Length: 457
View (cartoon, rainbow, N blue to C red):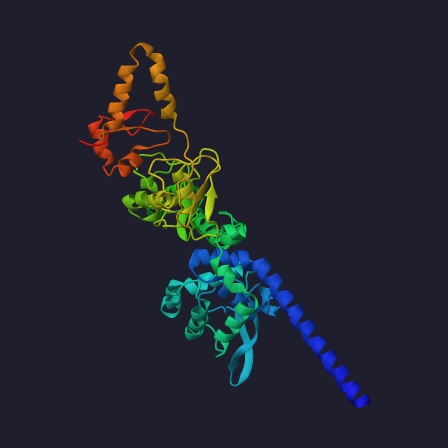
């Protein structure tokens, strides 16, 4: 009897210990994921590496941040030094052996865990490793199973069970949901210090080195050093190109590098002060005509500072979590299309609207599916103008009415409405901007509300 009771108590005690250990492990994983899901999602949009894979690898390699390597070197992915690494290092015994004896391996050390996440992206996207890891980026970022098996195939880990372990961690912690997250879902900011601190510091350091080199070369002839006449001439020759180097550094300072981020899985930047489509095209080595097409522009419109400007074609619908957008103030359909990275023509079509029409404030604009009827449209300023015309000439009421009837009936003419541009009107009537300017003898693209345009010849 006592023997049975002791066996029962031992079983209960063992079960409780196992449950407590599993609970502690789950809690540790949850806290770890909560802390690093933001950087994982951001890096996914920046590179294409699934957030679930990055988080699962970090959990496995660092023991949810509890490993010695993670604590002392901020290395959460077990990345070794390699021949090209010039940063800080940390040595510890690993599976590396010499003459059958385990020896200390060299691991990369980072300033912060976030830098480790960014470095993991850089490691997999390194051009020198393209032949090894390049095929992974052909897989969809939502297909974590292919990525798990692909990492093993590429030789990232030696453990034959590595893919199964990754998949298990992803399923147990529900990590695959983060592969569907947008940048807005993790409250990412364009200039977030945790996101691109590593890349920014590298760029700053490089710019400083170039600047210092230029300044040193320019200053050195003025030093009180005894040179022979021949040496002085040689020194002057060497310092001549140094001045041009210094000018180049100044130019790069005035033209700050664009911060590329993603909206609707499309590369986008924010327009800087003084930017033009031509300048952006030159900076990013993309044809100006393509950029104008991507952003639904004619090229004549002035660019608004801090507005979104896409470097790739916009999509037919939103891939984010929002199914609709509530119109605020005087927001135009173009503003909404740019905000969500959707082609303007497709956005009009989804909402059963004609090009040039604008929705009323507080109306819902569908971003994914199609609506059954159009939203309430904004009242046009042209209606007020036409309504006041008869009051001004009350003696000749019939004549203005006939004139307006002719204008409405004439398919070759069009009355400009509030918020419309020459490009939108041309696109809506399937003619070119140049033709409309020619037919109406316009000197520029400026239009006035109520202005009558010839749109066909």
